[in-house]
Image (cartoon, rainbow, N blue to C red; front, top):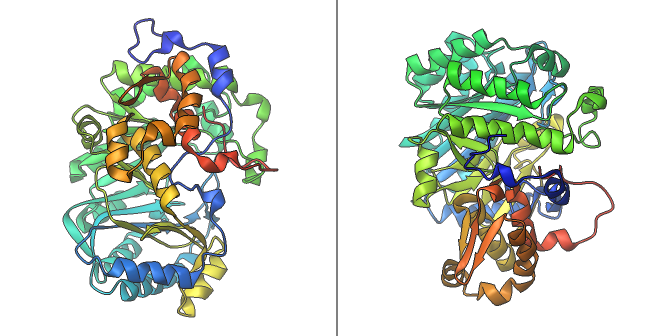
Length: 466
């Protein structure tokens, strides 16, 4: 590790890591997804959409899930459908169009989107013509704001230059590309062989076509990774791809949820201190190259919108990750999509056949969800504030929610006291501030405010926090 690192790495020890590396939520929502339940059904969702329909001038965010992949990467934790032969996506597009029609009718007026994101699976599993069809299905029912963030996830192995030209022509301005790792042995182990030349070709084309931002995804904790090897990958990514943003995700080994992960040789997986050094080394390399450590696992160039928003206190977080485009409501479209509408989280059907059957019958394809109460809003707001600003101003809590956080969160602050002694957070009379070292343990710093973690569970639910 770099002894002069600004990230506080010199204070890290195996003992400290062992103390805090435990299962915990990623906090893309609060309450978290395991608490969603079938009692929140289509009727409950329609009620929330009716409430949202009254706010016609508020911005709307939309996530569209394309579940198909031609092959399965063994590390994958996404909700996907493996289909080497094309064809199933035709019926799926018809179903998505029906769901869009149902949503548009429920929301009333033609709402304006300030954020549109296509994820997967592999969205570019669709042909360029099918991408045009889907985009048209959205824009005939919803208006895309001129300054909207319009993003898509791509796999260079199945994304053609025609795809990129079509997407840019439609109005997509952000590209997120999975790279994971550049080492051939790692790529072979996870069944994702993707030469550097292929990734570079797509990044260069995206910039030439005028995409305003290119994001690269890396994953640490994969088979055969070592600190020195992963640092090399990071240095090559910076030098050869120069992404505007980087998401360096922790591989979540959850074979009880994703049985295909059992195909990985667990003896080759870095664990504990060895795994953490992968991320710490990557963070060291990115910051040395001038990137800002935004939070969790995200890095951005200093002139990128995310870095500027962090400095100005404008950063937000939703199911799509960090964003500078806040929206009153977010609708999820497609199988397994999750939305956030009028104070409730809504999850669509996970089963493709049930999803398609529901919309064919004119039903919104809700599988489960949860309506948030005042306590959820308070605790969720505090957690998001910590994640997005790396601090918590007690005056902000009091003015926003009408409670004295020193008294209301006395138990949480007591728990954070031990983390303060370990150098993860500073506790002052007027609030909290995450230290550079504490950014590596941000999930842990959020957990004392999570009331649901105190409820016993008899089965593993979350991946490990580090």
